[in-house]
Image (cartoon, rainbow, N blue to C red):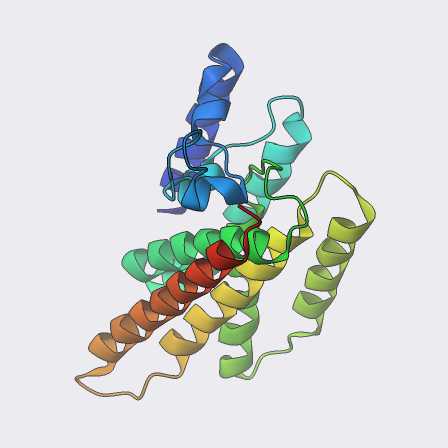
Length: 212
């Protein structure tokens, strides 16, 4: 699944380079969640599609995200299983967009990139390793460094990083701490569904706070 996600992002990036309209069709900005009456229809699916886009003007953007996805996926996918790993990734991506919706000061500012989902994987790795009793200091340092870059570099959406990190950590906590037994898998999926419900409720809150 890690390689599949990387492949999708790379193919979409190549399409962005060849067909500039692809970026405009799938980029996310908070106003797309609810739409603008008489001007822009509601397109909430962009909260997920933007996570598969990257800045066409920066090869470093996609290179860093795909490298991080590869490294984190090699650890997390075998530990969680393909389905749970995919759910973690997508929910983290959604969490990143919710973070942008709630925290951005400019609802018209477009964002792209898998960094929200990647930060979700960072948060998940922290939870999983802590549950195993492993030393998590290096993970904390990596999260702190990357989070700091979000505040220091103007073009990086720290809101997506924060939203993805929290969503990913929540997903991993649900998976890692579900009681063992025959109902464990069901409880894990119910817990992941609960995280999605919370994100939907936060989305509705964010929409109610938009200035239009």
